[in-house]
Amino acid sequence: MNQHFTYKAFGLIIRSQFEIPEFIVSEGVPDVEIKIGTVPDQLIRVTRKGVKFQATKNEFLIDVDNVAKYYVKNGCEIIIETNRDNVDKEVRLFLLGSVFGALFLQRGLIPIHGSAIKFGNSACIFSGISGVGKSSLAASFIKKGFPFLADDISVIDNNMHVVPGFPNIKLWKDVLDKLDINDENLNEIRPEIKKYHLPVDTFFSKEPLLIDTFFIINPKNTPGYEYEELTGLQKFNAVKSNTYRYRFVGGLEKQLDHFQVLNKLLPTIKVYRISRPQSPIMIDEFAQYIIDTFKLNG
Image (cartoon, rainbow, N blue to C red; front, side, top):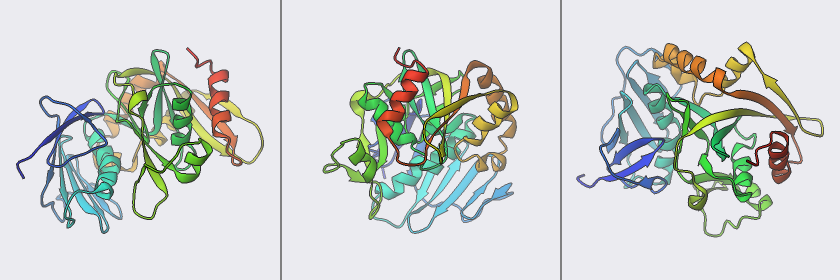
């Protein structure tokens, strides 16, 4: 396969043997090479093994049933083995999730499970467990005119900047309806799943931004909104536990790197736990509450 496509995402120049339409076309010397090929069945000297993944200091292997096997090495190479005729949206879905998560950790970066939005001249990250409303909230901020940096994975580099990911958000059908967004021309992320890719090219911020505030969204069973600022060990543990695919850190032997970057990051940011009612979820109202409470209009 001689054809190559070059992109930029997460502050990296990425050269791929297949198209990745989610990414922004670019040029330059690649930091990361993505290839189609054969991957190892087993890694040697495995330091961490999960149900579907294996990790060593410099290697990572994950097998997604009926989709593909992915091999990540030294933070600069990804090999994909699949029986499909082409690299379709399902293969890319896992590539842009867990596989890139492992690659970021190999490179000593901090991937956060959250969305990043530009307010003024800095970035805020909105994190929390899956399904808590990170992407929904990001979509609401975009509707209000705030630029977008990343969805689902927000990467913090060694300069404490959030680096732009790619201009796309994944949203469920009911969220699109609540935000009055027509899904007629949107692509489903996987067959038979009513979750869609929403392009946000016009509102995408392409420059790295210092992170200012880290919000952890938490659902509760009582009315109204509440927040508390986290400090000390509570602050450290909150950010650490919202690291994307934190379970990979030990296997990749990145505990020390991860600890050092967090220690450098935490004195420069504020961290808040912000709670919203479990239901009904008033997305636009919640976004406006955050803007007003934390004076994010600037």
